[in-house]
Amino acid sequence: MAVGRVQANEKYLVKVSNILKHYWEGPTSLFYSILVLAYFFMIFYIAVTFIELKNEPSAKQMELGMNAAGFVVFILVSLSVMLKPLYGMANQAKEWRILVDHFRTKSSKNVSMLLSPNHDANAHLTSAMGLKPVFTWVILGAPMSFAWLYSVVVTYAATIWTVVVLPMISDYGDMLKTDIAGKLNSTLANMHRGL
Image (cartoon, rainbow, N blue to C red; front, side, top):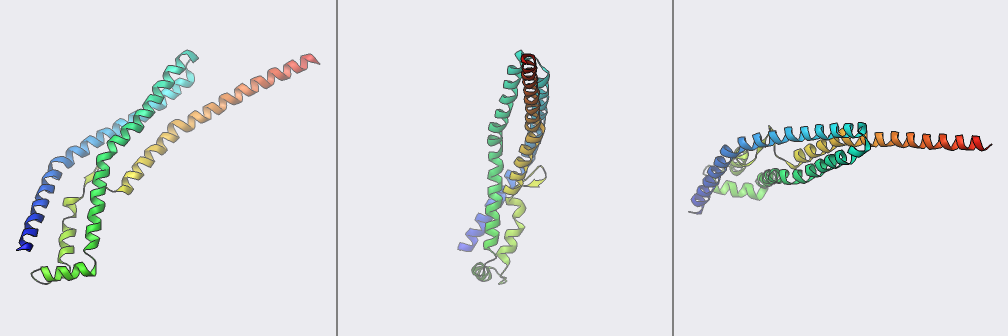
């Protein structure tokens, strides 16, 4: 009696998950591919803005700097919002792996042997592994996992660091060198005149 109810609940959950994934996995992948493209263009915009910032007169520098800084803040805030559903999908995949690993234990194999009609110790494990595509998400061709999400975020941050921050630091260092060299030359010239 209870086994039939468990199987009915399992079939219901599989059906619901299939419906959700069928209708939402494609549009979700499309949505995130558009976001990836938008974030790429944001990096490009920020890099171009900082290049313009270096070449513009000082009156316009403040406006350009605030625009670029605003975009960086927007990226940080929006990433935290946009990654929330992906974290949920990665968490679902992690929980599914934990469940499948539980079916590998000796006690679970004993229960599987008792409940399966042909007394197969791996019946529940085989069933759970067969359902993996139903309960895990694939977005942009990658299975959702925390490792994948962290690698994407770190790669994006490294790209921002390389494209925007390092050139800014280098330009600031060059500006300081020029400023110090000018002050040193004027000081030496004043000292020479004084002698």
